[in-house]
Length: 416
Image (tube, rainbow, N blue to C red; front, top):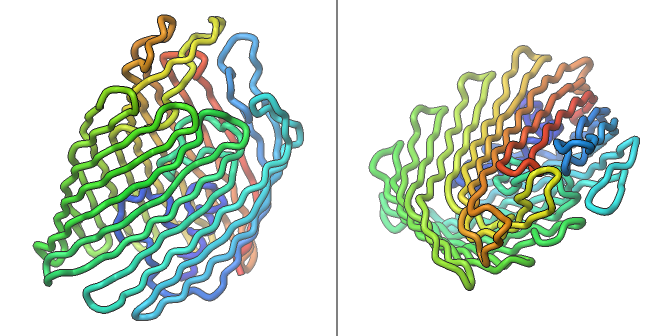
């Protein structure tokens, strides 16, 4: 239990792991705790150095990166109540980052950014055949968190993200079951226009168990998305897949099929759609999770497409093909020393000009890689010294979208 709490706290301090809400929403039931947890607190403070705090135009000649030192602090509370019939998992985190020099976000300059994360997960087993589930989270922060499968690019100021996923699971026979639900989610930006959106997702999944370790699935999803400036869209997903326990400590999930996206006033786009995840406890000390998703995303279809030094050109695209890959891991080297790290790779392909611009290209590709690594050492009872490094690289067909960014952070935290 102690190692579990340590790894959870370290992941939170590194900004990569927050309960199980950041799992691309692929794994069906992996966010339910196995044990009750009394009210547990984690608090920490950090000092860091950011080589490119506001990476707009940072690769263009004559534009200097904003290198700046910062201070940050947070406090987090976790509580789990688990009975044979009902599980309630709640958490909340409050923090802030203060930059020693103001940084530019859009047309404004700021040096203080608050952060809040919170959520409630609820599972109620009405009887042996009927299960009710609700997963809810809210986040207010400034950094793109790639582990949620939402972020696409550089930091764009503070934003508010919310999600509520509610479903009913029913087992019709010993082998056949269904899961039917509705997810309401969205993102609102403070400083940046044209990126807000609201999503309504309805889904139904058939589940058929062929062995104690394998469940086959077939699902239909319908998503309606309302966008702030660009036109709205509807998406249909037709998926088949499997969930398989490769071993008592390793689970793999894959779903694949077709996605049909209908853009208001535009054409209907179709694409293969794949999502997969693997979760494994390689040993009592090492854990790893990997996630992948490929399909059409209706977000950021209105983008800058010019090179540095050219006149600004905005491309408005009907289609954004997206591939996301995420990896998270931790290793407890000794009772006092723990290592953690992660990798995110994102590839975006923009196609089909909506109301073609003669100056914008017919297609454009973006590629983003984010790497983080760190360690923690217990210097006294429940007091840990932490250090981490985070690197982000953006490469694009449009020079204006290229940038590099590194962050080095040292801190101290405690759990009680």
